[in-house]
Image 1 (tube, rainbow, N blue to C red):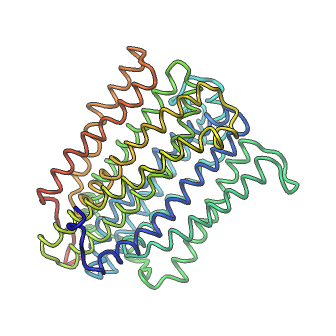
Image 2: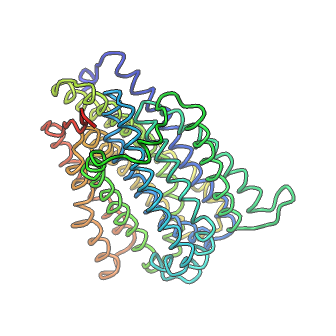
Image 3: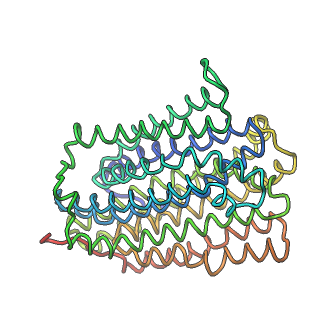
Length: 462
């Protein structure tokens, strides 16, 4: 296997140049979630659970934005290979319109009906109250965040992954500092508790958005802004966006909705407060551990889409895909060491000491962290297949079906039946939720090696 990983030096250099800033960007975002969890967890178990349930709803909207970003990236990456800046502006325009429209509707719904929406995730009144208080303050911050992330994604598809790293690390640092000030009343500020965490998140999103606007209009030379093309993308680009981006948007929406159902199941099980508290901690830690696989998958999509846009031969692109898939196995094995270390040395000795949670919740957290060892390896492989290879190759429909099919026909209904019909313990339900990833990995690996995923999605006459 190691021999098959030999590639020209430039391939690894290009991969790492893209991957490292993406990993640092994702690490900043995931670390922020963990820091929020740690700081809010000090306030109490209900506040911690409420934060998790609120973020479950916002997670759905964020992944819809991620779908818009990924769909646009399919086109932008290949047009970048052709150096067609006008077409890239048109695709960005379509992405901005969609991101703004969807996030504005979602934010307004959460702002006006926070309790009713949070009641969809749990029937615990205390968790609903905390989630509603938090979500109403942060609601419109996701409009700004969705616009920022669309532009950052476009720059990343044009081989500039450093912008996202700088913007999101700055946003993370701002949020953590303001959490410290506003949650606990430091530097003369009032003690705001959970509302302080929400306010800190809102302010950091505003700063993030302003940084992107300044870069877009006054600094960037890579993708010069063409307002007429961005504001009027044109029929051809609109048709291509619908054809290639819509499956990705649907994919991410259905996936995020199904993934959020796991939290809904946990929120309706007996002992929901303990389960949600454990899930809040281990979920935040797992997201940090998955930043490496996300970085490799996203960088792979840029590399593959650029090769197709440059007009490389199909066999050359296929070999690149096979190389990246093998590399993901090694990445997953390395990443899996992290949950082992966390479970053995950090949960009881450090992380759980700052939380006011029960002993039962701690036991559930240990079980979840051990399952995460397998989850990280399999998800790394699947990320490479779906986000990196299939989407980068323009085969978005196959990627969408593979990503959501087994969740809807197998794991989600299975978890509901096991938990709410047969009253199965959380250990059984949590492990069952992992099973669809294993099925997905087997089918996805076969699809990649067949080599029928390579499609040129660009036009020569926009």
